[in-house]
Length: 193
Image 1 (cartoon, rainbow, N blue to C red):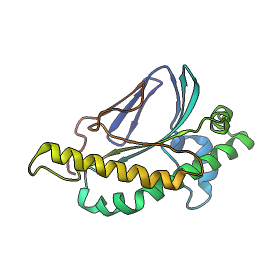
Image 2: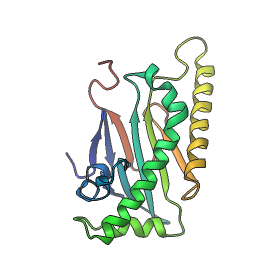
Image 3: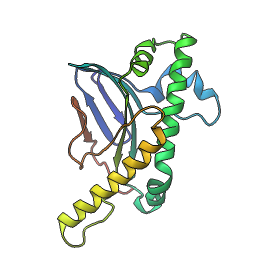
Image 4: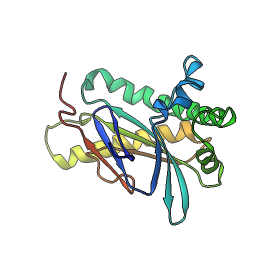
């Protein structure tokens, strides 16, 4: 694996050279630190991106609901924004604790960017079976899917407003995404078990 290539579930994340990335929920600082507190949660990636306007911190949580869409429908609509917000909160606490306790990696760069006046981004990378599958006009389906994503962003923004207003929801099918990041499916991704 290349240094800026990560696999999460059935997805491959390729970050270009403008990114500094840590798989936070796999890091020693998380596992030997705040994870010891029962119920603590963690985002998948803690990132800093070098941009012409200065560095930008990004927290990325990855969810793939393609295998059990019916079971996850209610979770996506009601629980997911709160879950992601809690992961961001706990990740920030864990980063601060890792820095203070001098855990294996130096987490100061991430804390410095979060504490700057520039708000960090909170990104939910979510794969799911289309919420309004295949009957009728594709344009109508796309409009409904966009409204579904907008509602999810609004709910998540409300829960992380204490930190930032910069919230995005992306997927491999949704177009757009983060500059310098390519996300692709691993072989067999999304296939039923």
